Amino acid sequence: MAITAQEVNKLRQMTGAGMMDCKKALTEAEGDFEKAVDILRKKGQKVSASRADRETKEGVVVTNVSADGSKGTLLSLTCETDFVAKNDEYVAFANTLLDMAVAAEASTVEEIQALPFENITVAEKIVEMTGKIGEKIEISNYEVVSAETVVPYIHSNGKLGVLVGLVNTSGANVEEAGKDVAMQIAAMNPVAVDKDGVDSSVVEREIAVGMEQAKAEGKPEAMLEKIAMGKLNKFYKENTLLSQTFVKDNSKTIAQYLDSVSKGLTVSAFKRISIG
Image (tube, rainbow, N blue to C red; front, side):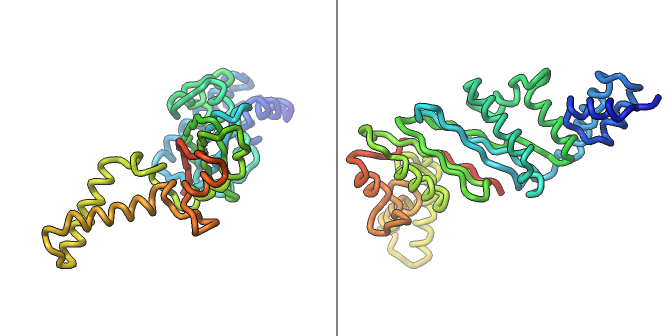
């Protein structure tokens, strides 16, 4: 049967699939729109399955902060190429997923994937998008931070995002300070807020490495642990946020900088998502 341009356009409006894909689906379905939609979904599933082992090193990070500034969310939607990542429709889709996650108060990627999207789930919609775009797409990360004030930062390339949770704000305007700290996190990638937040396995590894290095340097056995602890303290200074030297003012640590902005101001939590 002959498929008209109007019918093809109607299916395209319904699914967002390409003109030729819509025409082929309608022809195969003999003009039945529901069957045509199913055919396009199956095409998406096939494309998704065929690209399951592909790496998604491109994409976009999007952020949302509640109206009262006390809760922030970050979501990364990844794909295979920079060309797709910069597509307006792709970025809009990422923001739609984040809006849905926020509205549903989701806390994990799995919870987002299970949310209803039109008459299917988010997971199924992502498969549809994979079929439409021809690349593997996935929600690779989702983070939530709650605090007195949460400040977001998205790097200019759109592939790196940070949330900083500030406490003891004393009602002060701390947006600029929060942005400074977020940019510090983006650049320096600390492992934790302070030494208390460093995973015990990391601490044990740093001590073991420090002792091995000291032993290799011929240091006395009795001095090995002390030397290793000195190296551990250096690790804390370089890799925990509040102890790091403030990039914009080397005379201060991040803790000292925040305290100079407002007495007692500090970071309670942060999250960093980077693509690639």
